[in-house]
Length: 350
Image (cartoon, rainbow, N blue to C red):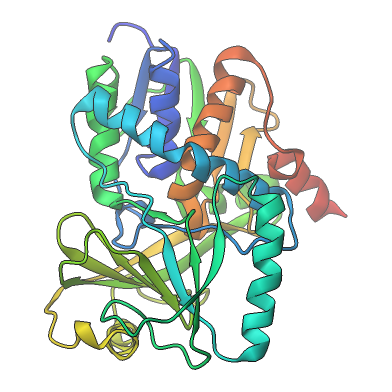
């Protein structure tokens, strides 16, 4: 590539998605990942694209909802461009309800979903059937939402790389020169760099751990029970996650991942004999606001930030990418004000 319009630093969910959104609009793109694609949290196992509960509606929930709605077409375009399947499926999700109070809360959320989800998805209350792929529910009722989807983080990364290369974009897994507009999508270390640059806490890293079991439930819904995600994938595996550890000393898996495995087998006895294929740990980028940090880098003309996906980075990625491409390529700032780095800085000053 002799000239570059946009350089993206970072080969995780936000970086790859932003690079693809720019490249498919005709921009000449260079993506730089200094380690390997998906080296951080975006190379994990879980891939749960799950909505927040339909209540207490706010900017983040609305943005995530819009991104989840566009995800199917967006990932289909990625697959069509590069020929690699990201393993996306809008599979739905089951959640057990513990008692009458939980059922009543779930019914109120179902009413809210009828309005907030615009008829595009449902939050249903359904009777438990006692099926093998179903969490035990003390109340006899489950929530079944039809918005939740899944994809394989690693396959999604490979699909985005293939799509980028198919457009002629350059993908480099070593540090090289940046040119043109620069999007910094550099994960938790990038949030720490921003904190150092502005002399106030922008965000940092939170450790997460997960496991992968050999069990084929590929067409079945996700399970969410007791804070645990159980996600069937297209390759006949089931991912289990995850922990959330703000204080950590090692990036490696430890005994907490064994607790996840035990909890998953208690929730779904059908997993009792499923072999453990992998134990994983990674550091997620979390901003102090818990919302993504997007937009202009103050004081650095033609430099931009796309960071802070935390636990929902892949779910947010399609809409983050398209809005960042609007900003970088067309100068149109369609990002929520609350996500701007300038807004975060102003809030921290207050």
